Amino acid sequence: MMPPAEYANLASAEETFWWFRGMRQITFAAAAPHLNGRANWKVLEAGCGTGYFAKCLEQERGWRLFPVDVSPEGLRYARALGLQRALQADIARLPFPHASFDAALCLDVLVYARPGEEAALLAELHRVLLPGGLLILRAAALNALRSRHSQFVGERQRFTRR
Image (tube, rainbow, N blue to C red; front, side, top):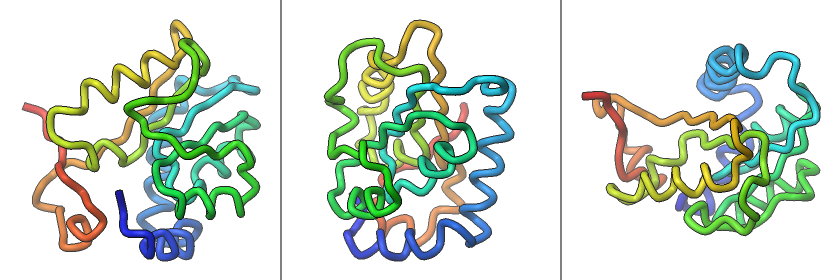
């Protein structure tokens, strides 16, 4: 989990900082072929942080977002954005019935998992998806790009394809 003070930094940067803007654009572009024409979806954002991405999706897509995060600090920001369904929960034990969501987002969250936990977390996301549901997953790669900031925020690993 990130240090609580880091959520203030995120909240002040997510709308305008180039990295966050670029990640939103890349994520939307990669997911667009699967999303076009889809409205009124019920969508889980697992590890929502400050909730800014969820807010963008609600505004731009008209989806019903269910943001969850383990951090009470992140959820305070999410609720301040008007995300009243924001819920404190661990992705390993989501408090939703089987087949609850049309889609699930897990953006830059698996880097905080302990190595070896990833399959169980993905299985939990799969459990709450409707049959044929969409998982949008984004995970950091390239250890060469890992920085002191990555370590400061608690990143445990990066992912590469072998």
